[in-house]
Length: 259
Image 1 (tube, rainbow, N blue to C red):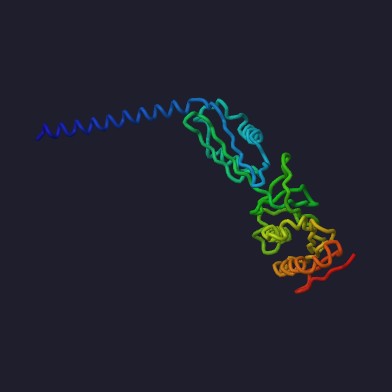
Image 2 (image 1 turned 30 degrees about the horizontal axis):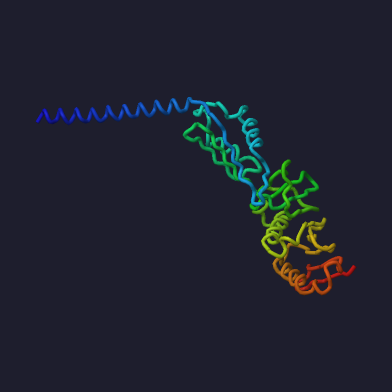
């Protein structure tokens, strides 16, 4: 009986010794892996739906160098904090999502998904900027001028929480721009949203020289529906250039002023 216990104990010790040896080999391999240098950095900036890009590989490389003080080429694998690198990249205006990983060949892969600008704001009180579809502020790009709807005039300074405010003029402009862009008729028609000193909105179409007096951001869906009906049913008979203003500020009415 004692011999059997000795054999069992010996087997357990053997298993433990084997597991310890495997663990030491793995840890040693990891240590060697972490000490090996990066052999290459591969950048992949996914283009915007238009096919254009707000930044390129060189821009991403310069951003890393500015924050880290060096590039990643030749750095030991163990010294690269992937999570920190992703957070740093995602702090840039143009980056919606960053995915960073190291492959089996010691190559650092950096994949960037860009924010898509949907509205350009010409703020008389500060620098011009873009807003993405979530209302996030983006600086203008030196590489690409997005062909998007423009908002100008008496627009208040950007507030990161403007969409959460109950009343905010920039919120009104942004929500109206979303409605216009989501509509198959108004999206290609509208060029600019202008805000007056008293907070009333004027729409500037791409076709014709008329101005559309929209007024306050109240009953916006009804106003757009009336405007669309007028364009589709009334305009073709009179001609796109016959009117100087189209006024939809008043409930259920479309009032036009001829040139």
